[in-house]
Length: 267
Ligand code: IPD
Ligand code: CA
Ligand code: CA
Ligand code: CA
Image (tube, rainbow, N blue to C red; front, side, top):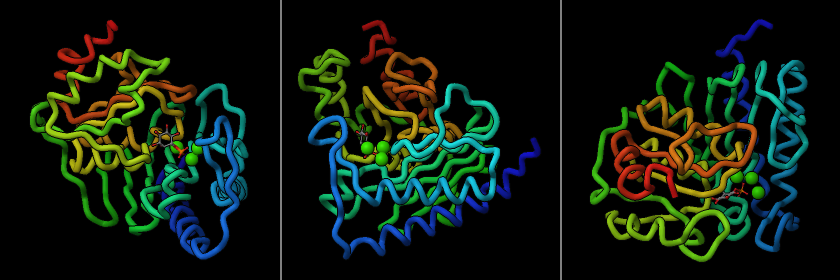
């Protein structure tokens, strides 16, 4: 199969902008909101229509590419061979429904399992975060500088408060010392935006015990391109075909937190 990354990238950029325009146009219209796994797991007709929009475009233009999308209109994927588009049509649906902001479209494009192109589009601010592996990360046309080291005491860490309450995924007391040691914590409600905030240095790390591949597929390509580190909460490589805990961070800070707060994954 001949793969022209620049051609794929040109289409992906065009489609993500077009999808964003459609989402902005939908703001005055009535949303159809339903729930999925629980009453707080929201989905709207716009999530579904946006995913279908990408699927139609990709199938028309690149019939041999595969698509993994959150809303399930794509393919069933059991291995990452060939070109795979990993799409979250709206990341931060709760924000989209309640706030009409703080959400993004996220697209990671993988070739034989390797992240090659990442796009995260903050639709309301018209800010496109974009990477082609090896060519740097850009916010619209501006290149984002490499990440620098930072100490825990001077760090802002994105962390959802749910994880310091009783839960099935990790001991709530594990993260308490880190919350205390950090300069501050934040929670934005969109994993994709939290990833680009790490990439741009607005925050220093993002920790969460459960994400799906479409939440992090694009963001980790950007963070790694800038010298940052992306693993699960035990310091292991992320698996693009299942749910993972996720810990992305500036370099240095990742090792520091792993060692001094996350018990090197031995909790
Ligand atoms: C969610 C957001 C949220 C994260 C959840 C995700 P969605 O994605 O990224 O910040 O905490 O785990 O499921 O459902 O809005 O696309
Ligand atoms: Ca969702
Ligand atoms: Ca998501
Ligand atoms: Ca989503």
